[in-house]
Image (cartoon, rainbow, N blue to C red; front, side, top):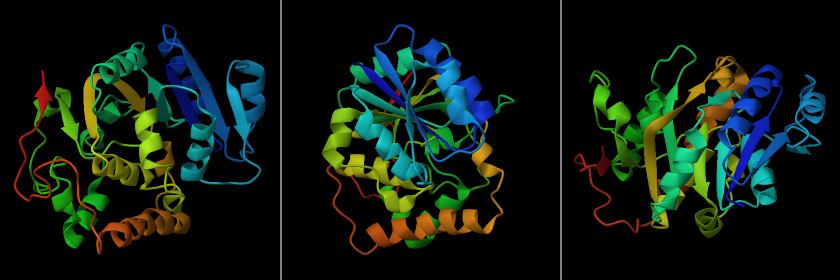
Length: 280
């Protein structure tokens, strides 16, 4: 089997009902499986999947595990050469999955790949390319960890305008955003499972970094796109969100700040701006 698509769902009925048909359409020329790990939903998602999408492999958590642990459940079930971790609140382009699998097939050094992400109104999300938002950016700068991510523009001033052409450059990056994260299964087996301590946030950053530590490359591939509705940001001012989001930052800093492992890739760490590997 070529591709395993893993979606974690927690009360995302309407988005899942839109997203699954788009993924099935995008996989029509690929040998694939679609795995939905339902994280103890109570909105009728499970019944909808069973009745509407019988081809989907449905796994039901007995309690609320969180994204990281639930993704590990799906990964363990997967049989594909590649594993796509994708959020329930995303819509895939018609040829998105064909294009990204083809890219991975021609780049044996690739451990992970992300694509150009747009909002529902078509606005480009810069975290498609950087892999992190401004909050993580600040933590990396304050702790000094930013120097280990030379390809993520973390030393660029917040006042700098985004160069429009960079939205469409295929390039090597430090981090791949977990909203759409295509992984080479052999690389994933090499570095190990997702660190479940990160729960809902930060596990994609940690996994991206571990892939680089193992000598793999992460890529940003903007020749295709997804729509990201960012539904998980609605409750960003809740206490639970605060604890999980900022707690993940402290976990990451504690994991690497005091004992930074040596990167296998040459020329890192360095503080000055790197030369990007770009395809046009």
